[in-house]
Image (cartoon, rainbow, N blue to C red; front, side, top):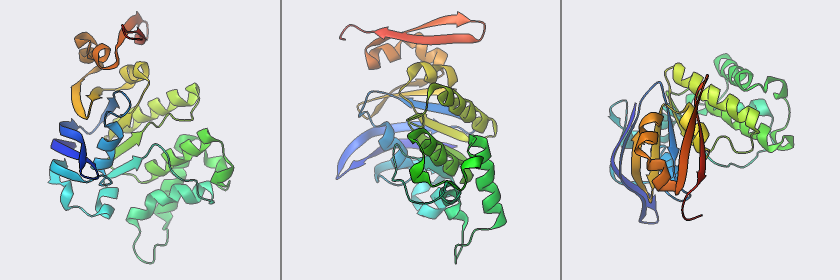
Length: 256
């Protein structure tokens, strides 16, 4: 479990997050949603130590994360940012980068590292691309390689910032199924998503953010009944009951 208690964090001495208190339980898919610039990405960066925490506490498994080295944090949380550079290396080599936290000098990969990378590529359906240069792949395939790298890291928590970027709708649905599978394995899965309908359908918990603060948090059912999404996004969130459960959609609010 990851816990934030009264966390304030930001850039160049200016806070973006204000007094944020949250928990990300193991075995749960938690989805962060909110308008652009509300602090979702900053929150993930604060968790992994990229953005400094000015005040408050982050705990991982009950231990203060501020006392952990970057290497120790990388063994606890895998982080997929919104974008990253594309190195001129093969898919297998890039996925293997997820194993760096476990390597000791002289940083030679072990059979277990290759096995973890292969398992991650198989899970993402890119095993046949192992020897292909990442730079020659489409944006969607590059994104799948980055996700495989995060899975190869084999951490108790997986944090992904807009992981559906560049993916077509079929692969977006497969990614959400993968997120649920990872939670089923006992991992704490935290996703930043802009697709509210998908967030409501696949998330165990939603965290709505606005202006660097928590506007609401709860199950999709609780969030829907409180109409908080309508207020945060100025929309009307609706739903239909189907044989497969509730299906969510939204219509414009008053100020469109």
